[in-house]
Length: 81
Image (cartoon, rainbow, N blue to C red; front, side):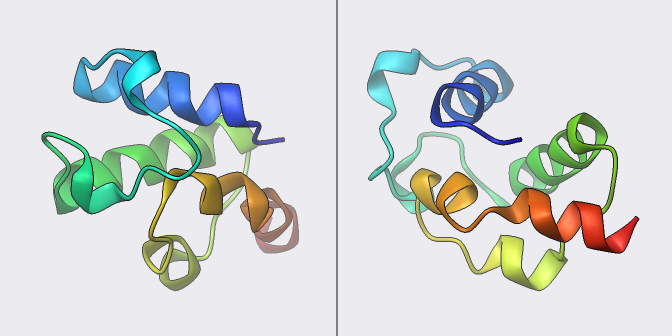
């Protein structure tokens, strides 16, 4: 299950940022170092953690960090397994 703290911690770790710089309302385009490669790194990491596939189009349509847990992408992972 994705939680706010898990997503923020993960993004901060992947991009070597401070967790305090990230919130649910942080837009991906505002994150220093965010690009398509890091989006894919995050997607793969989340799929491994959830144990299944996440819908790529739905994942890429997210615009802010909070969308990742608010849209319950983990349900997609359970369905796709």
